[in-house]
Length: 555
Image 1 (cartoon, rainbow, N blue to C red):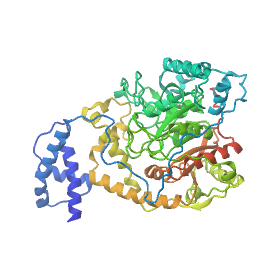
Image 2: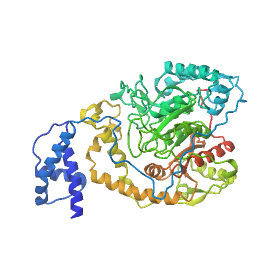
Image 3: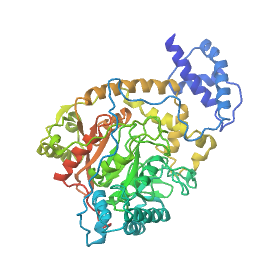
């Protein structure tokens, strides 16, 4: 009986959506033949009598859907069911506030103006604090580079030049008055164009929204402004956070202009790598910080789900979206993360959790694992780099132990979680037919993904999340015994699993392929374990400088 009830609910949701679809404006009665045809989509089979008993329910369901669509929903309304990935035994240590960052004022200003754009955030902070360079001068350097190099990279959707110059002038005045706010004061950056900034378009990379202006400041942009950072512009998001293609073209990898920058934070990865910004903000749902960071040779931090507020950002998946920094150095990621993390009183998922960096003396005490099977089965062209990286960690006094990713889950179904949630957020887009305006319309496009989401039954979405809960518990039980786990970036299902569970990850440059393009390794941490991830990554980068390199053609 329970089984039949479950199937009935799932089928009811599906049929109500199919035959209540506003685009078609169908009002004809639902008949037995309709039910028989629709069953095939779910691989179900009810007999004649059972189908007959459903018809009145399905008709009522359809009336309910039609009625609900007469009520509008603002973008900031999330479902009443909030995602909570944290296992029962997880103790979230309260935040102690911002770190006291030591800015070195002995940094020397390079004679070569182009070198300035590729300095680390902390080095730039030293130059600004010691007043060897002003924020206005630094901002002009980046704006000049944007005008010179972005026409071939296509990493910016909107350059906020007037805002940047205003913020830079304000930063200089504050610093001159003795009101130095910290290492981000006067530092120019870019933010993915999923984030709202008043008076400028927030396009989400998609043609239907290219003229959209949202009168709101995303929490992260607000926090960075309060820290004195200077917003250079809105960086490319692939269309509705999918890939590197947007309504203006394809964002390029600075290391190889024949390649896209990949991942929907394509603009953030490309601009950071090319020295068009000092750092950037990206988002990840299923690889969009890690992938462009890998492709473009920069360091990207995907924080714990719930570490950073998403208020003011487009939603792709309420239960999977994360916001994080993309920088040239792990140490820069640590600084930026410190300033953007924590509650804002609007995003229910966010916790004010502790962020404690590990000292150099404590590094050798870290317990580190590595996903053994992913390394052994790695047949990619970069597997030599990955195995060498394990040896390089060994030279730091770190001896990784073998661990295995969870197995035995219905991995092929988990993608419906993202697709169902994105379908709900973009309900109006699909029902209005404006999805046809999007640039890509093929089988793998976002437009097609949103259309098919209407045929995901609510029951199957919930069942997938029940399996997800088991996956969360198993991975937590494994990782909690370690401080950091090392993984090939694209090894097996690591990226899918850790995005589903909400664990933090960091993309760490670890070499170059035969064509001179960057490669990476990924570090995975415990919930709110960003401090250990970043400390280990920084220690690795001090000894193994595969990061911070300058792509040919932009120096």
